[in-house]
Image (cartoon, rainbow, N blue to C red):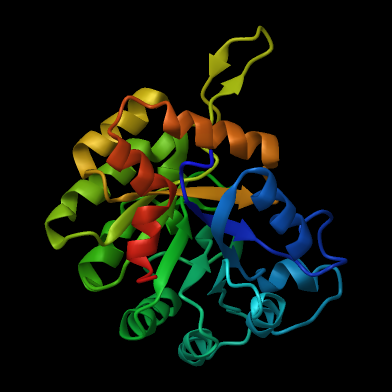
Length: 275
């Protein structure tokens, strides 16, 4: 792996006491084990800490955690319970973060709803990247249907965002449709190749899980959307070092160009975040 300078998206970091093996030191151990040079860290969502009695400004907490870590890039999150979403986006920018993580299903907000449109407008103004969870997540599908991301692209043409998991098994083609429909706008929408491994069924056969994409899906994605619109993600701490190493090797072994592989494993994210 040492021949690739890997810059990975999508690492959730938690305060001690809120989730086991999910602290900054655990992420750094995984990065060292997998030869990952840089990573994007997401602040926790407020519900993830409040449910265990930890009440913090999640973005300021993350800032203090990583302020001396040159190889970690911060993304903030929005606390929709306290309102003032514009001010929260401005604070994320003032903290020096490069983007925002939004999980419409977990946060129970509609992709094209008023609150999120306010977030997008300010994020676009502040030149902040948005990483969305996309695909199944046990909430009303109407609120996070894949085609709603086309509305985001249409209404905010200068907003850069990633669709993490690329819609998963159920919505991959719809995610591809959104990317292709907006391809003439340049590199604005990114496929987040995060937690997309195939699974093994009870008979030892490879099957697609809820977020799985096949190698053919990945090659089709690159063929249709180009080599500069896909980025690799960790989904730390939900995926461990072994899973991560296998994911990196899978990308390196795909029948795509070396430029495409280097793009996925870091160059595309670096460019998207102006790093």
